Amino acid sequence: MSELNESRPRLSKRRRENSPAGTKKRREVWVTAGEEAALVARAAREKVTVPNLLVTAALSETAETPTERKAAMAELMALHTLLARVSNNVNQIARHANAGDEFPQDAKAALAYVREVAMRIDRTIEGLM
Image 1 (tube, rainbow, N blue to C red):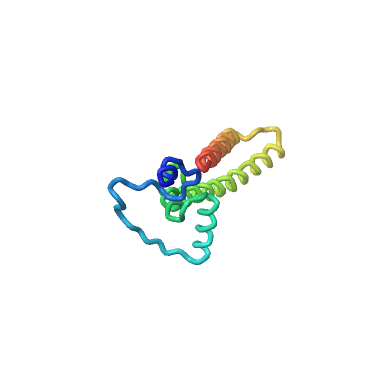
Image 2: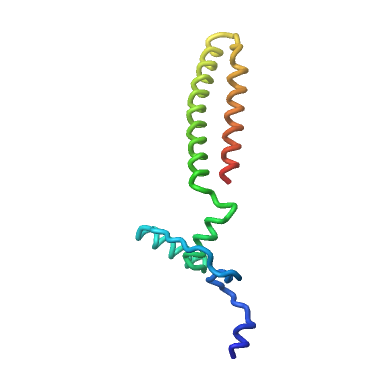
């Protein structure tokens, strides 16, 4: 009977494979009761143990780190400020153009800057995906 169990692959594996050299390091993580509940719930959904979930998430190349998230937020905040300045410039250009027949000389530079900011926003959003 034990030979039958050993030869049959497990469909839902909760544990990671054993390392041939054994466990190398032990890490302790202190979490709040709310964080613990969230970890346990997510581990149950993923059908893995909490330590496995933490290690997999931490070592994933596709996961966003808190530092990367903060940098992206700072970039978006800077872009928000730039857009506020650009919208002010565009309003001034429109007011000047509507007041007379002449299109302001600096309008081309302002519109080029608008395009640059829009492309920067696109790159930032693509970086978040």
